[in-house]
Amino acid sequence: SMADGLMEVDSDRAWGQMKKSGRKIFRRLGELRDTHVMIEWVQKLEPPGDTPAQHLLASLRQREWHLKQQTAAALTRFDRVQWKTWAKYMNDRAVRVPLDGPVFRHIALQRWQEAYDLHRRALRNRSRTSWHRLRIGVKRFRYTVENFLPSAHAAWGADLKHIQDLLGEVHDLDMLWIALAQTGKTFTATERARWHEIIDKPRQVRLDAYREKMTGPGSLWNVWRCGLPQKEALESSGLEKLSAWAALMDSEFTHAQHVARLALNL
Image 1 (cartoon, rainbow, N blue to C red):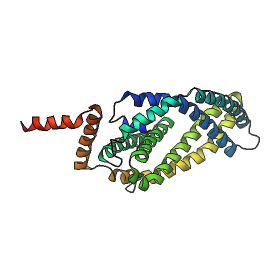
Image 2 (image 1 turned 90 degrees about the vertical axis):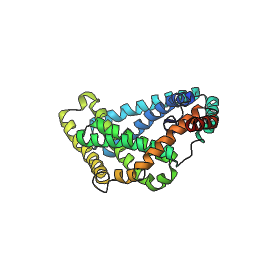
Image 3 (image 1 turned 30 degrees about the horizontal axis):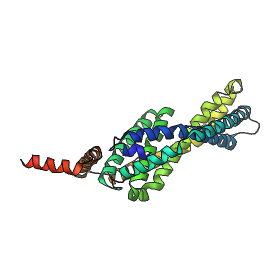
Image 4 (image 1 turned 180 degrees about the horizontal axis):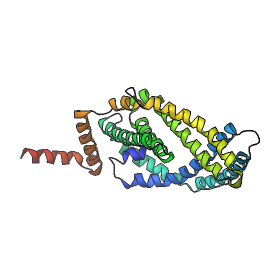
């Protein structure tokens, strides 16, 4: 998530290489985490003696075992020496862009706009896919604030986490429904109707809680937008972002600035 933010102003190839290296482990860990969450939801919602739930739990336990083997293998292959080299090299570049500064405020505004567009689409479409995309958009905005705007995170962090958790649980329940449908013949029309009611109730509670916080004049979207660049500050923060990008592209940026000033004076 740090690389995603810094790549906005630093085109050094090492950011992409580091992301690619980490993604192999994160993907395995993510799949294992999703399996654990699914097991927890089934155990929490399972009616006594429910056949589809029992079939799904057995399948998830088997999947968990295989994922643990694959994750252990991915950890073994992980190049720790290379990661430490990147950590030192990329840190020296990252510190050149100050935290809480206009550059990261501009990047956070981009993430806010992306997430807000997804919010409007989700309210209009109300599909599983649109809610899932909104969850990812909110997550990216949250991580940008958390990593690069510590003062804003102190004020917004709890709300951002709460909203991401609500959308995350909606996604988990949607995945549970899909997994139950894959249990085969045990998921009869009767079981389907019963599980639709079981899953829809907690899902709707979370969507209602999201709408309460994120719609209307007191919406958190408005609170967050007010804390990001406005009007004149938006233009200056955009110029700061371009300057930061140029500085990281040019090893002698101070000299380049001096030449630019002379050219403009002439």
